[in-house]
Image (cartoon, rainbow, N blue to C red; front, side):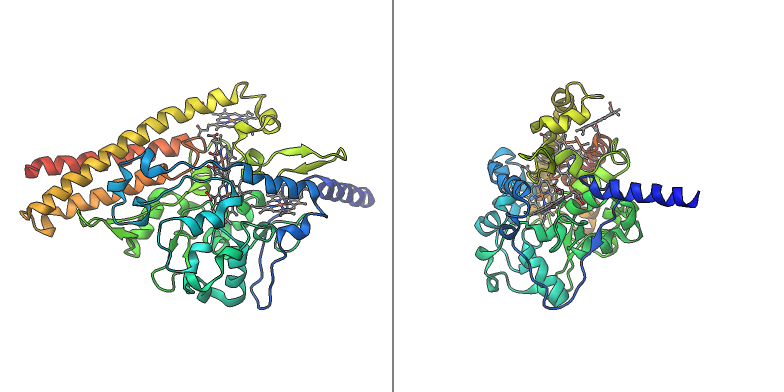
Length: 400
Ligand code: HEC
Ligand code: HEC
Ligand code: HEC
Ligand code: HEC
């Protein structure tokens, strides 16, 4: 009996090792140390030709939309913050570093490289937190490689996933082992973060999965008295949300969080020239891949139509609430400019504006337009609109 059990266990282990991705192999966390170096992606081209070719194919996702033109109201909402001047939409990983070097937004510190290149990650592993406050111009950014193999695999691609952005492990805390490695690999960057005022380290505003909820994150920022910038005309201390894909997908209301990882929907399992399966490292929308859609077809016969149906109302509403937020910003700015009111009289309106903007931004900057979790997205838009409406009513009350 015992022998049989052992044989069974062995068989399971072998199967697991042989399958493309053993779903339950937990992620490792990179060791910190000194003398760690990055093996560049090009050096894996021979060992993993198909994966490497697919990784290079991220260059095909080149289109970029300038949000300040598509959504002119953000010039008002983000006034005096870098994103009001230049805010390109996300495109393929291939462009991470060059897009960063090219933006019209000023970069003071090296922490801007956090989500672009392993050549910076390795400095944080070797030098610790001090790497985040190296002046941006002191590093030779132009020589850096875009999100390389090291970012998700350390120097052992093909082995288990290694989280090299160690702040993620700190932020997920005791829940780390319960999140699939394939999801954690993306959550290294597709998350809400801030630069700690003291030390400028890239930090996530939570310490557990429960803390990832937008209400909890808001409370966290209140608790540490944090704001990213102050709107110059209204005096509102505002928060700038950043692509919270992980928080949205893992949040309450997500239909598929227990079923699929980020990789399941964004990395297709393709068949190579040798007839063996490999995992495409071209990160795509599931609507662009027939292979991915085949895994959905049993429940979503027309995935594209279904997803557009989820996204359209979210997009319209995000735009409408954004326009309302612009109106609030301008009316509050007028009230401030009139000089008739004390800070005390305006405090409630400013607080409502801060909150409304947070909940709206959490949706606006999330890249799925509701597809990851339309319930949470709708809840955030509802909240944002209530805060903005009440602020507008208070302004009415003042006669402004
Ligand atoms: C090291 C940070 C980092 C990691 C890790 C990362 N991404 Fe990204 N991702 C980015 C950045 C930055 C961009 C935007 C690039 C640009 O516009 O220059 C991006 C863009 C994308 C896009 C294109 C978005 C668009 O609108 O066209 C997709 C899709 C994507 N990532 C999916 C993933 C998936 C899936 C994973 C995990 C397997 C992942 N990413 C891991 C940083 C990262
Ligand atoms: C159940 C499938 C599913 C899972 C799991 C999933 N996504 Fe998505 N994701 C989508 C869909 C659908 C879209 C919208 C695509 C479109 O509009 O073409 C999307 C859009 C995106 C985009 C914008 C890409 C683009 O081309 O517009 C990014 C970036 C992204 N997801 C990252 C992630 C990350 C990171 C995770 C894990 C935390 C994740 N996704 C998990 C289905 C999924
Ligand atoms: C953004 C994260 C990310 C990056 C960057 C990345 N990978 Fe992966 N890789 C994954 C994920 C997720 C899996 C699936 C989970 C697993 O196999 O543990 C995977 C699986 C693999 C596998 C096993 C599956 C297969 O097709 O054989 C190989 C080999 C691999 N990656 C090689 C590479 C190479 C080489 C690079 C650089 C050119 C690279 N990866 C860059 C996330 C990444
Ligand atoms: C076992 C059935 C099943 C499979 C397989 C399945 N889905 Fe779903 N999916 C559902 C159900 C049920 C819903 C919820 C529908 C609703 O709320 O009206 C849903 C909702 C969604 C949503 C909207 C989520 C939201 O919050 O509104 C997206 C996007 C989605 N699925 C994408 C996918 C993708 C991509 C795949 C394949 C990788 C897939 N689904 C596979 C059953 C499935």
